[in-house]
Length: 260
Image (cartoon, rainbow, N blue to C red; front, side):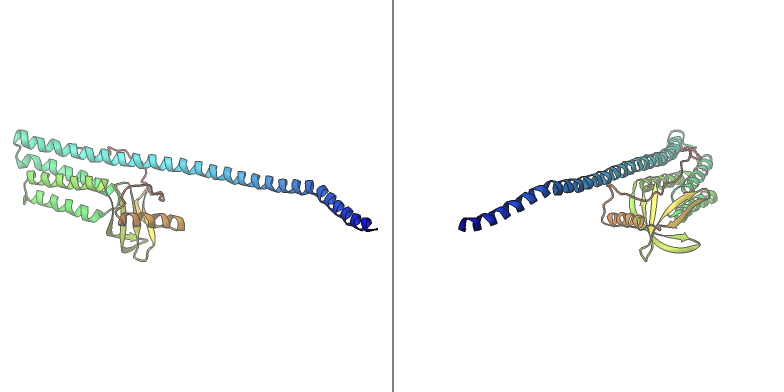
């Protein structure tokens, strides 16, 4: 009888182990199904991320190409202006040309520079045009001779070249929806320009068929991108990778209205 008491619990344990063994394959199969589902879900997310990354790189490559094309057009226009003034200065040195002969050429170059400033980024346009207007008036009324006027034109072009290569923050007055306000502007060479209002709203300069205009950025992501640009320029970080909203001018013939 004592051996029978021990045999009964042992038989129960064997039965329980047998039942557990019979359930194990089903549980394992269910777990494998769940794991496979998770793997498929992760693979789908990975495929989506890869496609998004591919599209983003295509967009950035296109944007970089547009930036390089815009930069090359501006550099060509500057080079043509430099060449014109170099030729005029060579005439002075080689032929001793008098002021009366050079004055019409100097006034012509002022006109070319005025058109260059008006077509370019809307950066302190009024101030730059005022400098040209003053120089033109002085040449026309004879308060300065043509040689001196050409030297001042050369200095003006050197300033334009510096501005075309400079990434920096300035303050200037702009018009937004008919309202004039003083803002900070982040100028990226002669290619793009963004602005920041005093209440930390951000926007960009956009060129349309009727000329340049300033518009606010509605997207929170784009505002954050421009905010990071301002912060980097404030810290004197003027080179590097920045993801920015598109603010490129449309393509225009590089040599239009430029030359002697």
